[in-house]
Length: 173
Image (tube, rainbow, N blue to C red; front, side):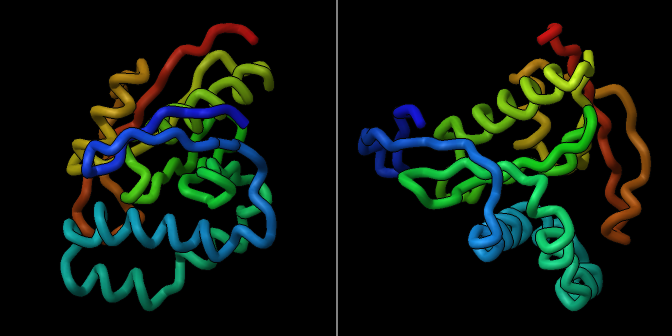
């Protein structure tokens, strides 16, 4: 753990303890809440009512957490999970920061952690996807050295979205 300065929306300065660790079974509900929060704030406003209803009915968030929790790393603020990252080989499947905790460095810390582990596993590149409408994530990844290398239809949401594939060269570990 190490202290990370953060800024609250009211611009009150504080220091909090940030710990990045493997997700535990006890974190499942908190991780699902983080994913639901980012879905509500980012994806749901872009979806048609029918696509949103279908996604919510299918229970994909809970199924994803149940299937992959053991691979997740969580960023905990003062012991509370506030963000998560999931990667496999050199592909980052998900990086989500709860809206309350965004713009405090958690996403950058998790991304750096994942990139370090990917490099230590012998990969020279990290890859990930986002959607063209997600201006916030595209800007975040550009600031962290990612280049947009391909665009293709997003088949996950049945929405007409376009997926952006991003890539970043990693230094040898």
